[in-house]
Length: 220
Length: 220
Image (tube, rainbow over all chains, first blue to last red; front, side, top):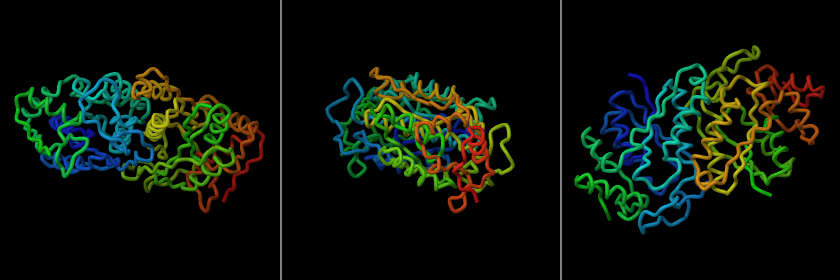
């Protein structure tokens, strides 16, 4: 089996991606500790990897607090009044670009040519770095930026959820046996319990409803 | 004056770029502590910024050692037997992609739309992420990845040295009053003295010779 780097966050989307990738690749999960409010994500990421029988995620520490500019890493209130149009304050500057850059470095270092990311352009929060054009541009960059690319071994960036609605993602994951009770999506949890009101909770909740699946999330 | 993020390493190229950028922009220098063998780079970066009258560089700590794969960050010998063709072992996987991703995050966070990098595709070590096609691909990505790009404020990636020979860079910098005695290029220094034998030392030395300028480097 070829190796693949899989970005995992502990959330619903990346758990589904990991299950998809694990069918074809030896997965090397990569996660980040970036001073986010929701450090419970890291525990969820480990639990998901263990459940799916892949190796423990490598944790990269990146201090986005020194850069600032997001409600997820700075002292800005997480909005609770519903998903709005436009880019919200929870947007973390260039986050997916950074995550993918580390994934690319890791891929080169271990000789992997496949990278998986759980971005989604349907039921999402309006972040620019979740769109298909972004994914295509990064793949192009990856092939110009690396030894592998130069030597003709194509690097592929897989975003299998990009065109799926949240309910579809859940249905897909359930069919593969993903335990969504281990995942965590809330931007502002208290004692590991989800707020139920932030964008991420609202999108997740609606997904379970639309999929007709009982929501395993523990709310406050 | 508009703000610009300038990647500085303490080396000759980035010192020249900083002098160029400082003529038109309020420069915010960004540098990296990535467990490199040549930690003296960081002291040089600070000295160069002070000399050029720009603010102190913000230092991002990134642990590339956990990713490995380069003679600059792992326990691999730095080659001393001359510049060869192909990509050398001193290549750090996806390094410029990572550096530029942080620069992009910092730019978004402070509202800057200009990023400067000292890559050079003429007298260089054969790294894939120093080529014009890489720079173009990153600029394209930057405009798709960010709030600024989505909202129509173009992000520009400047690589003013990309087509210059090392001697030209030195002449250009000398004309702007850059003190190259403060800069540092060696991949394997001992007590802040350059080895004179690694690729980086050889390219630098030849540059001073070709420019007809006395080399201020302190060799072992």
